Structures are given as structure tokens and as C-alpha cells.
Length: 419
Image (cartoon, rainbow, N blue to C red; front, top):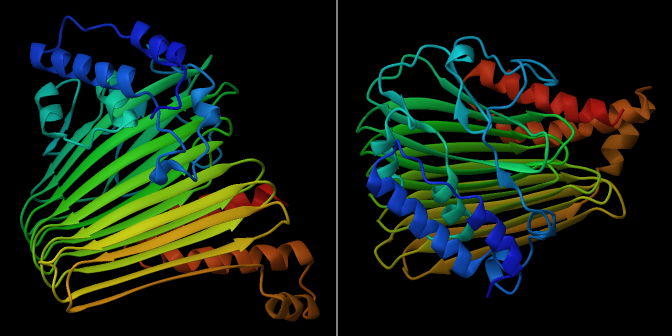
């Protein structure tokens, strides 16, 4: 069942305009996806997987797909500079590639607007968000890595003069035995709300390795939705890190399929929320081959009237013998009105496995707070130190020091805003 008012679907249908420059097959796929959205609308809270995500901020407004790249300069309005030394930086503004602000494209990287055939390989589940994404996506990055000399940083900058949306698609293919580092930053400026809706398909060949860092620091009134689907070959290793600090409403959907034996999937996420922010992390990790491993951790720091949601499912197929899967959710509530919902799930069809999950929700450690205050540290500084220690632990595994420094800048920004 859909929760979308019919006129809401009609608004997006009316905004669709076929391009005369793209291949016919792509236009046909766009129209089919739009028809699917017109039929199904946005998800309903009656659907279990969407029950804990309040979409009113999205469904109550028509976010017309933007036709412009955004009227902002590189650094204007961004409190954390996005340039990271030693990375190749590609900038997309409102979902469109900006060559003048980007470094030269490295080998193996193409832009979808320049190589639309790459979009054909991006196959995701038929969700409402995915349908709208395929109907309206304007650009994205196709990354095929054989040998990567330095990390790739994709910066998505949103800016709207009115309620607008941008939709982008990424394809990441790591060839067998190759290694890569991918950083994605979602940032924004301006006073008007925008909706950033992304789809990313990640394919790891046998023995391939990918470190994937994602920062969600969109403009305060914005909406962010993301669908990431990962397919892993034998002996591959995916390590993902997600930090969410921005946006009024955000939802990350991550699905990983460990299709080859001995594949490893690591996913660490932290949400720092205040005011009336809402952020959801929804994951499904499938162990479809033997001797695979998952390490999944979520940390939430929730203040004001904000709400954090973690719902994670680990599914072990009958072929997934000798699976080792661990899932842990830990949250701190900083106010009486803050809320966190945690919903861990294990679905196991094999009998030779080691699987566990746990969840804790509490307040800042009173003994640790007393210890710091007794040594003359001001209360606000002591509070910030405890929060930083709680969250920073989640990102210790990031391999590259420059990336850890970049992540810490967003943590410091969030802590400083409360001072």
C-alpha cells in the first residue's frame, strides 16, 4: 500500500521530460520506472521495513527535479572544506558533474552523462526511491578499478532556490585482486530544502578490497535518501563507514550480498542528531556462501527532539555454513525528548554458524563526567570529550589518516555547534 496522495505522484509524473540526446533504451527504462512510481507511490508505514521512518517531510512537499547545477562556488557556505590532500576530487552539483571544479578523471572513471551505457549495469531493487531515481537521474560516476593510485573523493553539493530534488546513480566495480578507497561527501548550502536521492551499485571481484567512507552533512532542511547495493565475490573485503550529521530527514538503505566464500563485510555507522532531525540506517547483509564474515556496528548520539533509527538484518542462507556475523547497536540520549529505535534481526538457515547481536541505549557515563569535572574541566568541554570518545572509536578502523582527519572535522563541527 502507498502513503502517497495521488496528486503527489502526479506532480512527479508531470515533471518528467524525455531527453532527445540519450539512447532509446534508457528513455524506455526511465518511463517504466516512472510508471512504477505512479502506481506504487512512496512507501507506507504499514510496510514493516518503513514503519520506523516518518516520511512526512518528504511526502508533504513536491520536490521538483532541478534543472540547474546550483548557484554556488566551491567553498561558499560550507563550514568544512571538502578538499582532502592526496585524493582525486570529483564534484557534482545538484547531481550534475562539474568539470571545472573537479580534478582530471583518472583511468577507469567515467561520467554517466558522458557514458550512459554504464547506467545499464546499475540494477537495484524496485523500490519507490529507486524508481524515481532511475526516472530522473541526471548524472553520476562510473568507477572501474584495476589499479588505483590514490583515493577518489566524490563531492555532492546540493543547493536549491525552491523545493527541488536531484537524483544520481553511481557504479563501482573493483576488479579481482584490486584495491580501492572511495570517499563520498554529501553537503549543501542555501535556505531552501532540497532532496538528494542516490543509488549506488558496488561490485567486488574475487579477492578485491574496497574502503568506502560516506559523509552525510546536507543542509539543515534537506532530505537525503540513499540505496547502496553491494555484491561480493570470493575472498573480497568491503569496509564501509557512514557518518550522518546533517539534513532534516535522512535514510540509508544498505544491502550486501556475500556471494563468494570467505567474503568479509564490515559496516560502521554513526549518527549525530539534534533539533528535530531524523536519521535511519536500514541494512540487510546476506551470507549466501560458506565461511563469510560480517562485522556491523552502529553508534547514535541523539539530542533535542531528534530520532535515530537502526534496523539491521543478517540473513544466513543454508549454504552459508561457518558464517561469523556480529552486530552491535549503541546509542546515547542527551535529552529527555531524544529517541532511538533499534531493531536487530538474525535470520539463520544454516547450523554451523557464530552469530550475535546486541543493543544498548543510555546516557553519558556519570562517573566519567564526574572524573573530568573534578579535574577542573568545564562541563561543556567534558561533555564534548565523552561524546567524541564514544563516536571516534567507530572510525579508528579508517585506514588513511587524512580521511580520519576529515571525519573528525565534521565531528568537531557538530560538537562546536552545541557550544
